Image (cartoon, rainbow, N blue to C red; front, side):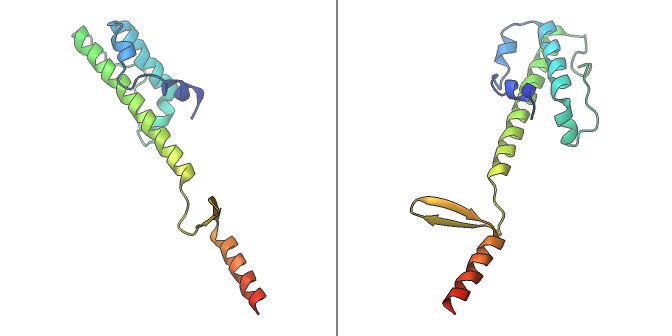
Length: 128
């Protein structure tokens, strides 16, 4: 995850910071900025087509509806980014089922299966 994504994590998920401006131009520019900065994440998630210019949201028929669509899109992107980040953090804490967790004197040690088997085999040799 890049710097742009890290900055976005500190912003309100509901896009209230953008909504308070009541500016369609500002909201539209924010959608374009987010899509340009983070569109690569959508492609990684399997989305084939990412519309960077926001023409799918800024229809030009009703400014209020365009603004509401922009707010929803900004909120959606921020929520997806939050989920992606949480998932990434969980993956770094996930251990395989072949790992053993040893708890000794309030210390937690994670030992891979191969190390665990090595320690088992050395114990059995010592017992002989």
